[in-house]
Length: 455
Image 1 (tube, helix red, strand yellow):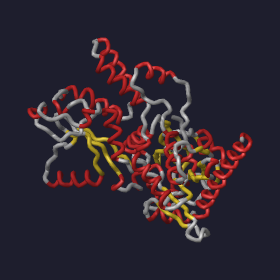
Image 2 (cartoon, helix red, strand yellow; image 1 turned 135 degrees about the vertical axis):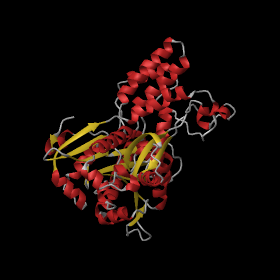
Image 3 (tube, helix red, strand yellow; image 1 turned 90 degrees about the horizontal axis):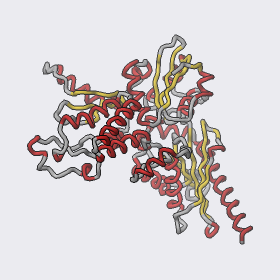
Image 4 (cartoon, one colour; image 1 turned 90 degrees about the vertical axis):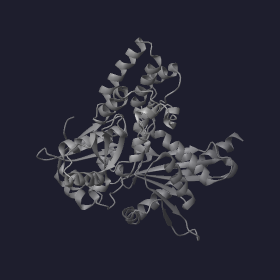
C-alpha cells in the first residue's frame, strides 16, 4: 500500500470493498474504516456536506489516505479489526462505543468452541478474574475488536466456510451415542457430535484454518488448502479432496451480503448522530394494466442524481396488479447484483467452467439508504426481504397521504439519530422519490410506444 495525497486518492479509489486509512500530515495513522465501496465511502467525507463535529475535527487533520482493497466485506471487517488492534488509531480508540465492539474467541477445550463476545462482557469477565485472583487465560485465541459487527450473520458465514461445531458440550464417551446435529446432516459440520472426528483432526481441519483466516491470511490459507486437497486426492481420499475443493471455491467467492449493516453506513465517530449518507437508492413501480408493469431504481450520490447508475426493471413474475409484489421482485433482483455472478455448482465440470468464466460480475454498490415510493406496505415488504437476508440498511417510504397532497414519511427503523437525519434531509428524499416516479413513468411510456408500433 502507498500513501497518497487526498486529491490523488479520491480519483484513484476503487469501487470495491476494503479498508481505508487516514494519516495526519505527520504520517501518523489516525483512523481506520471499512467500506463496501471505498470510492463512495471516502469521497463522502470530503463532499463538502455538513458532518458531525468529531468527523470535522478528524478530516481537518487528514494529510494523506491509504487503502487496501478486499475481495469481500468479510475480509474488510477482519482487516479493519486487525489494523485497529495493531495501531490503535486515536479516532478509533477515542470514538469507540464498547457496546458496539465485538470479539470472536476460541475456547480452551478438547473441541474448541468459536463464539462471539461483546467488549463490555469481556471487561466484566476480566474484572471478576482480577478480583478472585484467577490469572488463568480463559480463551485460547481472541480476535477483534470488530466495530458494529453483525454478529449473527458473521458467525453463520464463518460456520459455512469452516464447519466449526455449534453443538453443546458433550463428554467424549457420549459423543458416539448422540444423534447427528442438523448442520452435520446438511454438510456444514464435520461430526463432532457423532465422534467421527478426533480433537486433533478438528484442530487441523477447522480451528487452524479459521485462525489463519481471521488473522487476514486468506491467500495463504487457500494455498495451504490446495496442497491438502492434492495430497488427499493422491491418497485416494476423494471425499476429503472434494470437501477441500468446495471450501476453496467458497473462500474465493464469499457471498457476504448478510454482513452489511449500519456499521458500513454510520460512522462510529458520530456518537449517535447521523452521518451524511453517500448513496441513496429510490424505487417506484409503474403499473399500467395490460401494457405491463415496470420498476425503476434511481441513485443519488451526496444529494445529487447519478443517472449512469439508474436502472429499470420489467416485471416478470407478478401476474396481478399488486405494486407491493412488483416491488418485492425489483428488490430481490437488485440484491442479486451484489453477489458474485459465478455460483458454486454441484458438478466438478461446472465448477471448472465457472472458474474459467470471463464474464464480469455485474455488481452494484449497496446504498446507505433504500427509499420507496409508498407507505407501510412497501416499507414492510422491503424490511421482510432484508430480514430474510439478514441485511441491516435503513428503509424510508414516502406516501402521498389521504388527500394525495401531503408527503408522509414512513421509517423502517426508529433510531432517533436516523429519524433526525430523515427530517433534516426531507427535500433531498422527496427529490429522490419524485425522480424514481419520473423514471418509472418514462420507461412505461417507452414500452407502451413499442407495444403500439407492434400492434
